[in-house]
Length: 65
Image 1 (spheres, rainbow, N blue to C red):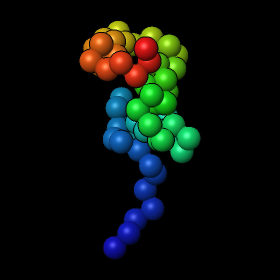
Image 2: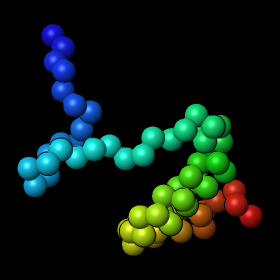
Image 3: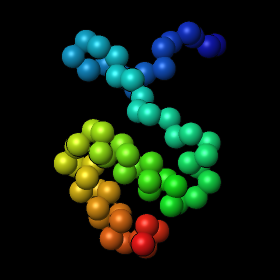
């Protein structure tokens, strides 16, 4: 039985939580493109937790060097 529910991740403060940005098909082709996509999200959101995650990931990879 299917129901027509909005595409949300849950409810926070009485408002539905929307899913994050979708990764375009062109960005799914490789890890380097994905890291660039993540960097753009980090630059826009300026979240300290996301920046720390991105920097830790970047140190473990050499995709952008």
